[in-house]
Amino acid sequence: MIDVTCIGDINVDIVTSKIGDVPPRDSQILVEDMGLSSGGCCANFSKALSRLGAEVRFIGRVGDDLFGDFVRQSMEGIDLRLSVGGKTGITVAIAFDVDSRSFITFPGSNSELSFGDIDLDLIEGRCLHVASFFLQGLREKTKELIDFAHSRDMFVSFDTGWDPRGWSGEDKKIVEDVLGGVDVFFPNLAEGEAITGSGDKKTICDELLDLGTRIVALKCGKDGSFIATKDDYFFVPAFKVDAVDTTGAGDVFDAGLIYGYLEGWDLEKVGRFASAAAALSTRGRGSGNYPVRVEVEQLMSELNP
Image (cartoon, rainbow, N blue to C red; front, top):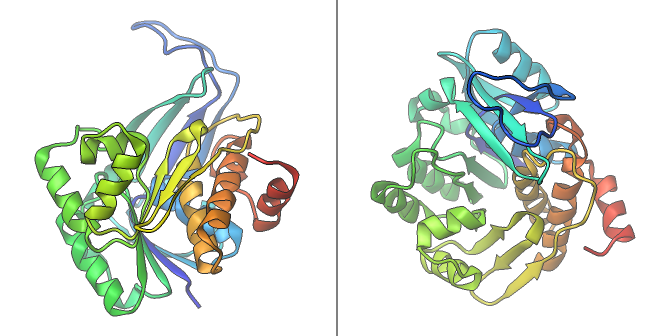
């Protein structure tokens, strides 16, 4: 039985080991390692949630190519419902010594994902998760998907991701309309600032809640996270681990929080579980290092963040 249906982006990630800086033009540098992994915010979320123990369905779009075959094989254990078109998306993820990252992305078939690709009967379970709003082709149709999920008594989680073209006024308006039907919203700090215009974390959460979302989980990377409802607001510190690659850690945080929410835990425990899961995901490169539940619980028992 499906617990969570996920709709959004899926691609391959080409992930580098850490470098000091990008090479200047017309030059070359060597890296210690480089790996290939399934990627995309929604695919990362799906894979992380499945590893934790939930039954997950993923709806997306890939190409009829080698990379499409690769991501199918990399998403073992997930009920994949993939339409085919264009080329499979690709992201080159560059990791830096200062624990920051840069991405070069070809959205490929993700940008072709449309409302017509989705069989609404496949949206089932307790939760619908929609991610990478700006990299897939649903945009204005996202609200229809949310309304349909609510008609099936599902709760909805949403992660916009960053708009690489810059947040236009139209983008903000569409997101604001969508948030009126969202139960759990996962912005990072930069996205929260782009939507609200505020740099204050409490103000960001308050303004997002005023737009209609019931729970805001504001991700601040190594500085932890803030979880807010109309009645509560608290800080969740980050767990300290020796990070190799932070690519996808925010998606794993999302998955950890939704997993705990499905388990019926209180929000403070849910937040700590999500933080621990995200920390453990950084131990290696790519999505193959996502933790299982017992690993997360072990870290929570051994360390206070």
